[in-house]
Image 1 (tube, rainbow, N blue to C red):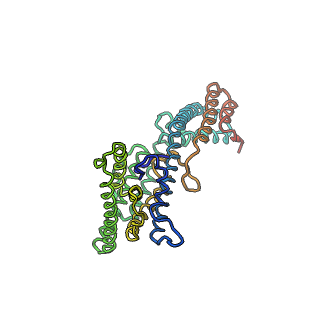
Image 2: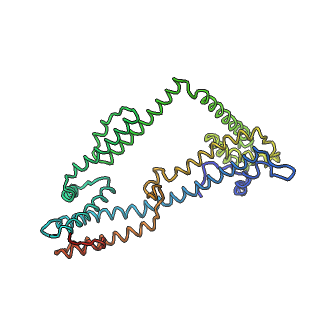
Length: 390
C-alpha cells in the first residue's frame, strides 16, 4: 500500500501498525455494561472507522490502477505502435487491388474496402487523425469522399452540437478559436475549453443572482460560521500538539528524531485540515502521557464529528470519481456505460495475436499476384470474411 501524506503515528515507530487500530478503538472509552457509549462517542467511532476504511480502499485502488497504467505504458503502448505501423503497411498493400479489374464480384470489393476502412479508422483513432498524405488519398478513394471534406463535416457537426448546448444555456460563445484548429483532436480540446469556460460563467452568473436577490445569504453565513468553528477546532488541536511534540523541546536525541517526523506529519495534516490524522496524534499523546481518554467530551466530539463527516463525504466522492480521473483514461473501457480498467496481460496477448496475424498478412501481400493470394492474406486476421456474391 502506498504511504499516505500524513500518518498519525506513535512516537515509537514499532507501534505504528497498532496505532491504526487504536485510532478507532482507543480514542474513546470502550463500552461496558455499566458505561455504554454516548451517541456522540458512537458516531465518533463509526466516522473514524469509515475514514480509515475509505483511505485504505482508495490507496489499494490507486495502487492497482497505477500498476495497470505502468503496464499499459510499458507493454501496451509499444504494441499499439507496432500494430498501427503494420496496419499502415497493410492498407498500402491492399489499396492497389481495390478495383473492379482485380475483384470482379461487387461483394468482394465491398468487403475489401470495409477491411481497409476499418484499418484506416483505427489508425486515425490511435494517431488522432490520418497524418500520412498517401493514407488520406486512400481514405478518399475507399470512402468516395475527399478526406478533408469528411473531416470538415465531422468538425461542423461537433460545432453545431456545441453551439446548441451554449444556446440552451443562454451563453453567448465566441467560436473563433475553433476555426484555427487543424485536426479533430485539436478542435475537441478547444471545444472542451469553451465548455469549461461556459460552466464557470453560468456558476458566476448564478452566484451573482443569489447575492442580488439576497437568496441563501443567511445559509451561506451559517455555513461559513460552522466552517470557521471547525477550523478553529483543528487549529486548537494543532497548537496543543505542537507544544508537546516540538523537537526543540526534547532533550533525548532518539525521541527528538521521532518528534521531527511527527511534527512534519502534524504540519501537513493541519494545512490539509485533516482532522483524522490530528485526532490520531492527539490520542497517542494522551495515551503516552497516561491521560484520561474521557477528556474528549461530547461537546468536543460533536465538533470533531462534523469535520469527520465532511472528510467521509470527500473520500466517498473521491472513490466514486477515481475511475473517471483523466490520469486513468488510457486504461479504461466501457462496461454497460461505466468505466472499468482493462486486463493488461490479456490485452497484451490479444495484441500479440493480432500483430502476428497482420505481420503474416503483410508478408503474404508482398508476393501476392492473384485474387486468392489477397483473400488468403485478409483471412489471416479476418477469417470470418464470407466473400460471397450478392
